Image (cartoon, rainbow, N blue to C red; front, side, top):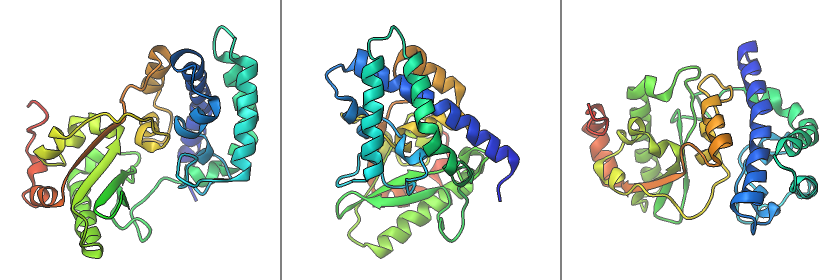
Length: 271
């Protein structure tokens, strides 16, 4: 069971993020990159599929080998809607029609997706999970298991779980040499401080776009609702307030830094 507050916040988020995403699709295809096919933008720039009841919540249309007949049909229909609206003076009609079209696919998933992530048997490392980029690189992913608090309100546990996931992953796969993360959170000094100076030195923007919470997570408030300030920034400027940033460091430097509790020293905060 979830509280009414959690459910209401999630509904607010979904009712806000779908029109915002539609606006972004319209902006990218019509103004920013008119050479980009809307099919490509739907697969690689946005995160609509995982809002639907047909998604497993993990797989993404941008994943190599991804295929789902329902997404193929939805993408085709959304492209048809875009083609009918692309010459409009603004994105309002496209947003409204996308919302009307997608809502029957999204509404059945509202209760499932409104449940906030929590530390437990399925998330033993709290906010952190990991996948792999080849044989020697672990890729970190973050979810806020502390809602309605921020992860930064629980810095000690956040850092401890980061150390544990690195050590546990390396114990399972001793060939891992590098820790990587691609996230909008890499823009934040309050996030950078959990990593050694090598990490900050390696911060860079990738050359490709991203359709996952690596970039779209910035539109979820700590309460689970829509982050209106970041949404307004995207609407008015046509770009994310926090771009996708990649970084990495060696396992050795990350482990040594966390064991030394270097994250407690505000060297990146300017204070």
